[in-house]
Length: 346
Image 1 (cartoon, rainbow, N blue to C red):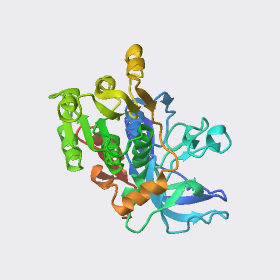
Image 2 (cartoon, rainbow, N blue to C red; image 1 turned 120 degrees about the horizontal axis):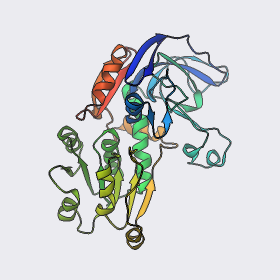
Image 3 (tube, one colour; image 1 turned 30 degrees about the horizontal axis):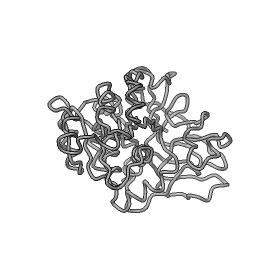
């Protein structure tokens, strides 16, 4: 099978590898679509992400969907020719986090597809436990199935923020996660959603997808926009989806007293500049949002019913042979989401 290896910083090489063999509880999946995630770009451009360092060669890609070609003897969940979305995290199943109803994503021994040393989905075939595969309805495309992963990130972030009917929400960052966080917030009943970015194309996309105010922070102060058009006290929930320092600094300025700030985007500089006395006096809830748990069935159902439109965040799709050019293009500011077409299935 063909595999796209990251062989150096900013360098992919297509190589031939043997097909993986499957264990009794595993499935062999022919990979059809792989989304390019921000973490993939960090690995591609810098050789590391969030403290995880690549040992070359390495295979990236964890937003994946494909078609089942073989199942292990113990598998009954899916069968050959089923189209499936792949949940990329494999928890240990034995620790206290795995024992909780919705905390397995915090497992300290989690193996996550494409996060070193676990290899990813930019390859023609992947062996994966059937427990973490989800059959796609006929009306959900393989590309949409691959995007169940970033949609799950957005769903978990809004759950962490407790976004509910009537809330006012600020989303900082108009990349794929910011676009999906906005959509999930609206689906959960948010009354007003403000999204900020510096790229006109991303702001225009956010407006077309239904946000109430898309603010270019190079031209307008988002806090002033909120005070003037939304609520002079601030918003109920801020969902920081960019990872940029300026946006992070805006979070506590924009949230109202007793409000909630959720950090989703991974910053290059991890320090959070904040006034502890102010945080105590204003009683902000500052939360992190890390991946997701038990979201795939609802994500796929939401795509099927039209509640979530993940396809419209895709700004381009590239062939497997053009993976390196696709990653270079995905790094351009105006691009929102790139997808690699590993096979020619629909």
